[in-house]
Amino acid sequence: MVIGHCALALGAKRFAPGVSLGTLLLAAVLADLLWPLLVLVGAESFQIRIGATAAMPLEFISYPYSHSLIALTFVAVVFCAVRAIVSRTTGQALLVVGTLVISHWVLDVVAHGPDMPLAPAGDGRFGLGLWNSVPATLLVEGALVAGGVFLYATTTAPQNRAGSLGLWALVAALVAAFAALIFGPVPQSHGVVLAATGSLWIVVLWGYWVDRNRSLSQRRDMRAPPTSASNASARPHVRRKRAPSHAGGRSRI
Image (tube, rainbow, N blue to C red; front, side):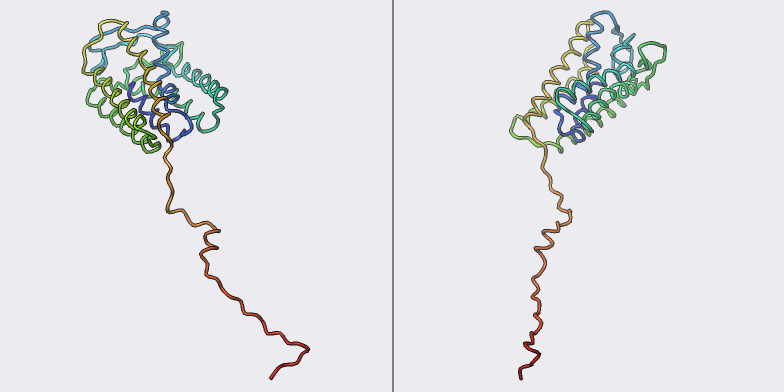
């Protein structure tokens, strides 16, 4: 569910406007960026198998360190700690970044068959099997993309053509990669799969570039009540009557 992870990152900009889209994308796909490295060193494994699911010809045999819930929670804590030190991110923004890292496990449980581990050790595996239905996969992931793009596009505004065209080119590239994954030819080797997954670094860098050419939307709430200063200026001027003065207690006739 790579495109679904990226969609969450796009939508998360609404809740962490001070964090670059590149960082949000990095947090959302961090598990998939760690996975090829762990496969290359032999710590995790998969195989290409036609019919593994209707939407994905891959069988994930073992990935306890990059995709288990406990491991990703640890990775989220480390990622947030580094982010807090380097960029002094605090509060809600840090919570959003950490949640994105862990959300990878949640979305993969929805998409995968029962192969998602709860912890690096143990036999517990989870998965609801969305990928067993291509129409359901297209519907769910399409809805995620539409929602994420809407939130990002309404939270930010382009500063130039790069900010506008760059965003839509990124979305088009993600959709094209998603379509190729489902309807394209079966990968011919493990190397092709790992290289395609590693290309997510391009998506992350693309996100940083897009965000640098966009700014937060400036919206005024026209329904906000007027301030006390404006109330004071809006009041009509009232002249006060002066009480008559009586000198020496005598009145003039």
